[in-house]
Amino acid sequence: MYTITKSVLILSLTAILTGCGGGGGTTSSTATTTASSTAVATAIQKGQVTDSITGTGLENVKVSIGSAITTTDASGYYSFSDLTASEEATVNFKKEGYLLGSTQIQLKSLSEDNTPSPNYLEFNMHAYSDDWKNGRQWSYESQDGASGGAVEIPADATVDTNGKLYSGTVSARWVLKDVNTEEGRNAFPGAFKGINSNGVTVPFVSYALTIVELKDTDGNVLDVSENITLILDSVTGTSTDTIPLWYYDYDQGLWIEEGYAERQTDGSYRAEISHAGTWSLSQPLSEEVGIYRGHIINEDGSPMSNVRIHALGTNWISSDLSTDENGLFELEVIPGSSFTLAAYDYKNMFGATYNNAIAAITSGDVVEE
Image (cartoon, rainbow, N blue to C red; front, side, top):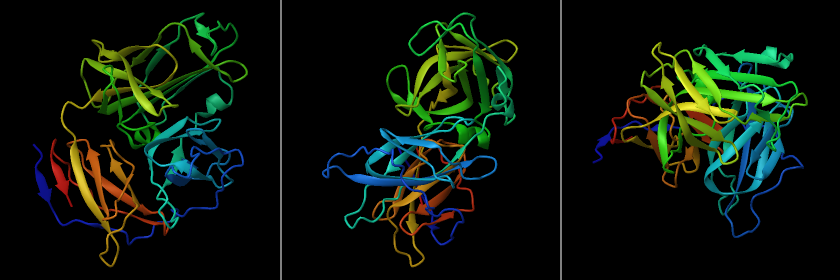
């Protein structure tokens, strides 16, 4: 049974944040649209893509939402129009020299007076190591201090996308990130939930993000016909005997459970993955999530609708949503962890961040503020 806790905290959009404006990005001429009928609720979506270290806008990033594709301008801005409204849309980002980026957003439709829908996204991309850019055949990257380990790729088992055996030089990259760190969470694609082996979508806590990439001499993606072995010296945040493995499907924007990592006697974890790509070690929640409800109001006390909300913290289940006509939003959170909030008014292009931490919510509780 849910219990209700009431308090008087209300986040007010009164502080203007620098760098939150819409920018000068335009939709690429190559962009396509997902809406084909005026009967379908349409939305626009804009954003900026930046380097995670320098904060500089990234030019010529390929941005896609379904079949709609565009590229960023010289300052990293992009724009889509005539998208189909959706509660969960996947945005993918691709640029040479950077990790593939992917996140889920809410696409709110245009209002009757064509007021822009509240769909603005600021996305950071993470660069690969210089060793890989300089052409080393093998690169191990652990930029954020994640635990080390090894990856074992079977010999003579590399195949191209058609399943044909490849016998040329293979360039391989392994990325390992600790999802307990801010950088690791920011690099984590999609949402912190996935489809388990029973076909049920479940929220999870993630401990490690690992990416295995194989390419031929022309830069084309390769895969393997046999399992790849991953060995992680340790995993921060858990010592359970087995942790489920999940691979990320960028086309669907979904994490899908496949296999598990097993703890060894020396404390390391060993796992077999069936193909190259993006994988995580993530444990489904064994308890109910907490629910946080809040209101966004203007300086005059009036409710603000269509304000985009972000949850910032270690409990990232639902991190992109918007307020309704009464300024109300509802957020699922992982129990036991504090968090904070940021809000963005797309129509007037200003935002605010709540400066204090919001106390952890107990499993099954609903907190209204």
